[in-house]
Image (cartoon, rainbow over all chains, first blue to last red):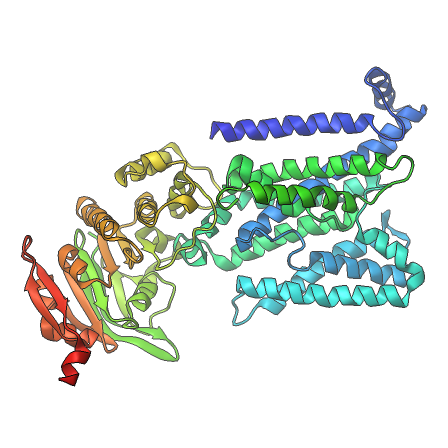
Length: 335
Length: 265
C-alpha cells in the first residue's frame, strides 16, 4: 500500500520535471539562468521580450494542454478497459474517434472553419460528434432495457466503420480539403492557446474526478456482472456513469488535440504494472502516465524536425507501438 | 436467527417454469445441500433467492421477513453469493478482492473505516489466506480462489450463504478442504448455508440436510440417510444405484450401477 503511494508520488515528481524541461526546449531555448528573469517579466504582467512572449503565450498553455489531454486519454482508457475487462479497449473503443472525425470533416467540407465564442468550430464539431457517436452506440446496443457489454463493443465497431467510410467519402469528394481534414485526424497540439485550455479544463477535471470516484465499482466488476450485482452494484446507473465520464474525457481530449492514438491504450497497461489492478491507484497512475507520455511526444513533435512540426499522433503511435510490443514480450500474468 | 423459509416457490422464466411449488426451510448453523441432475433447477433457485430472477409465484422469508419488503441494500447485506462461474481475469490482489465484501455496508465511494479493515483481516485469517494477501487472484489455484470468495462472503457479514457448486473443477483434496471450511464457518457463525453439489458422496459426508430436485419439483428433503436411498436417487438421476455404508463414518456411500448393461441383459 505504501509502495503504491510512493510510486504515485514518484510519477508526480517525474511529471513536474518533464514539465520544467518542456518549458525550456523548443525553437527558442530558454536556459535555466534566463528563467528567473523571464518569469519575473511574466508575473509582472508586462510581457515585452520574445522569450517571455513565447513562454507565456505559446509554450506554457500548450504544455498544460498536453498534460490535461494526456491525462484524459489515459483515464478514459483505464475506465473502458475496466468496464469491458478487455485490455484492448481504448478511449475510442465505442465510436468517439469516428464521431469526432465525422463532425470535423462535415464542418470543413461545409467551409465553416470560423470561430464561435472564441473556439474553433472544428473543436466544437469534434466534441459534439464524439458525444453523439457514443450516445448512438449506447442506444443501438440496448435491447429489452438491458445493454450487454458485448453489444456495446459490437455496436461501437459497426458505427465506427460506418462513420469512417463517411469521412473517407467526404475526403475523396472534396479532395481540395483533404489535407485539412487529414491533418486534424492525425492529432496535433500546435497553436493551442489559453482559450482551448480554459475550455477543456473544467470538462476534464470533472471527468477525472468522476472516474476516480467510480474506482470501487470498477473493481467489483472484475468478478463479472453477476457478482457485482450480488454486492449491490446497480448496473444501469453504473454503466451510465462510467460511459459519461469516459466519453466526456475522450470528447474533451479530441476537441483539444484531434485523434491521438495509443496513449489511452498503453498508459493503463503500464499503470497496472506499477501500482496493480485496483482502480483507486490505477486511475491516478494512468492520468500521470498519460500526461507524461503525451507531453514528451509533443515536445518531440515540436522539436525533432527543426522549424516544422510533426503531428503528435504520429509520434505517440511510433513511440507507443514498439513500447507496447516490448511490454507484451515481457509481461507476466495478465497485465 | 436467520431462518430462510421458502413457501410454494415457483421459479424460472416467463416462458418456462423450471421449478414448481418448492417448500423448504434452511436453518442457521446447518448446511443444506441441493442435489439434482443437470437442469433440475439448482442454479435457477439460487438466482431467484439472490434476487437476480423474480419468482414466478410463491414467496420466501428471511428471519420472518418477506423478501418483497427487502431493499436492494438490505438484500446484499443479508445474502452472500458464490455464482457457478465467477470471472477473475482482472489481477486484483487477494486482499483487494476481499475488501469488496464491505461494499454492501460502506457503499461505492466512501473510504473503509478501521472497523472495516478489522473485519477484512479477520475474514482473511479465518480462511487461511494471510500468506496470499498480496497475490493477484489470477495466479491462484481453484481451491485458493474458492477460499477468497468465502473470505469475501465473511467480510460481507451476510447471514445467508448461497454457494452454487463450490467444488466444481476441484481435485479431491480441495473439494474436501472447501466443504470442510464451509461446514465449520456455518457452525461457528451460525450461517444459513445452501449449496449445490454434483457429487452424491460429498453430499452424504457434509450435508446436514439434503434437498433432492427432479422433474421440476422438490422430490425429498431430509437427512442424508433419509434422502440418499436407492429409489429416490434413481427417480432424480435416472440411473440405478446401490447404497453402501461409509466404512469410517457410517454415512451412505453411493455406488452407481451401469444402467445400460442392465437394460440389455
